[in-house]
Length: 181
Image (cartoon, rainbow, N blue to C red):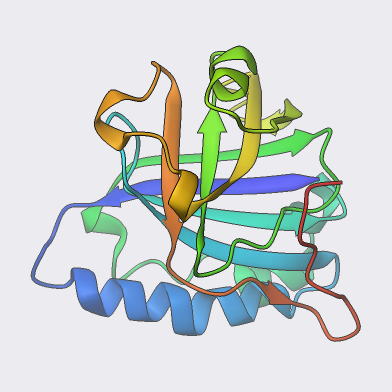
């Protein structure tokens, strides 16, 4: 399943420190939780969505309600909470593992159906919300080669493009997956 966490950050004075915390401390803590398989962080290139997106491959909702998650991965945001805005969490079925997005690639998400992505020449993978906010109820994700990136300023409504902020972290023994499964 795919666990997404989206937010914006309202304090430019501490945003670099927030990003260091999330990328260097939070993601490694999450990937150490049993049932987490991949974690990667992104920044939106398009408007109309939260600025930051974290995408995790996990075994299921019980991972997020368990004691190990609470101890290692959940919380730890008290210092930053007042600056976190537009925060959303969702759990999606339909894609087992998130694709690893490399330096020469972007991640695209659509909440309006696969057709806008197909028209952009992308191969979308369908996801269905199964827990947490459950909104948007359906999403499609696709890998985008940077050389084939659609014009960010003229994306179809509901399609957002994200640049990787980190490499995809994987648990020991798990291989990074190059395409959605």
